[in-house]
Length: 145
Image (cartoon, rainbow, N blue to C red; front, side, top):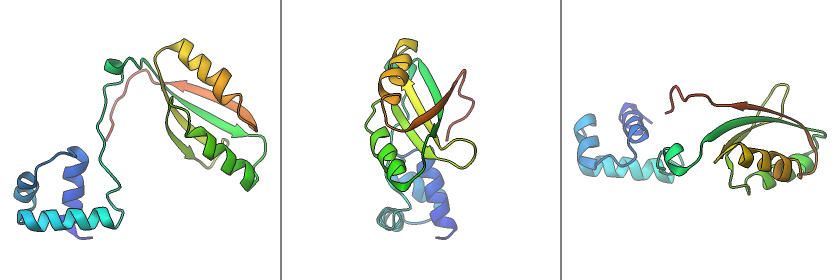
């Protein structure tokens, strides 16, 4: 990777639908050179995909929360079982295996507090090996990139 690749990644991070002409003008490279670099970055796995940033409120998702989860046991089997199961829940936006006092950080989006209660009590608590769950609620998103 060089400075041009870094610039291209920055432009695509800001706007995944940026036109080749715009990226070409910003980098000083030809459109074909930009196209080839983007394809190379995709094939090498540096660019893993493109997504749309969604307005949660417009989608009816009023509750945005983070849950710290600690498992009772930490064998490879239990970790794999948790990781395989947590991604199946539509409420889960992201899940991270973390170091520290907790094992996982889960990002949750639901319509309302009743939906959050259902997720915690009927889905998460029903999983094997759940020790403790600590929840934090987003009051306002300050920045997101």
